[in-house]
Amino acid sequence: GLKALCGGEALGQDLALDLAGRVGELWNVYGPTETTIWSTLRRVVAGERLPGVVPVGRPLANTAVHLLDAELETVPVGSLGELCIGGAGLARGYHDRPELTAERFVPDPFAAEAGGGLYRTGDLARRLGDGDIEFLGRRDDQVKLRGFRIELGEVEAGLALHPQVRHSVVVARGERLVAYFVARDGVAVAGEDLRAFLRSKLPEPMVPGLFLALPALPLTPNGKIDRKALPDPEMP
Image (tube, rainbow, N blue to C red):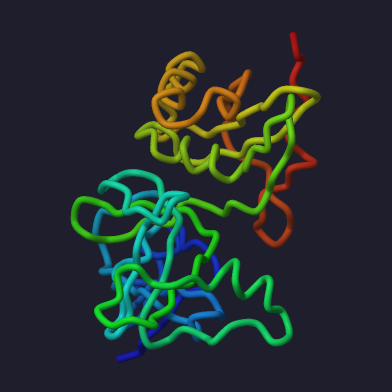
């Protein structure tokens, strides 16, 4: 039967189940170019219960995936960490970019033999109880508020850990962070509950000052979140 592979963007539940009913096998795959493309995969079975975004699964053979904190220490199951990849697929580095190579390709503290490398993807994820890995966002969008450097992607990923948050986007408005979110199954979630939840996971400067529930996040024609179309909150 026909096999289909989905990669490059997060695979949503509705599209995944629609495709799974049309092809013989559907696989959700993940991997950056620096690891010669695919590093993890997960098969999607027609009719199965899925979260809003399909997990990226588990490592391929000869590949190791670690979820690490800023000190490259393993985070607990279910906790937010940077997705780092080791194993046979790693590139040697970036051509004529020694500084960037040194920043992203680091010695692998988990390798069985000395000399192995580890690629820091900049992607944020968590390991689920069944061993699958769930992609939660990027660290790339950094702002500076009141002297603190804040990765907006880390705040969004922290919100994604809340069981009643389906989608979220965090932006800087003036000197405060504003979190726009879509609740799962339309269940109302109080901003104070989300604030308390984030305070248990993130430093205080990274906790948004305002939480706004939306029925859906605005999208561009190619399906990306349209930050410019987010409603302008009335800041107190």
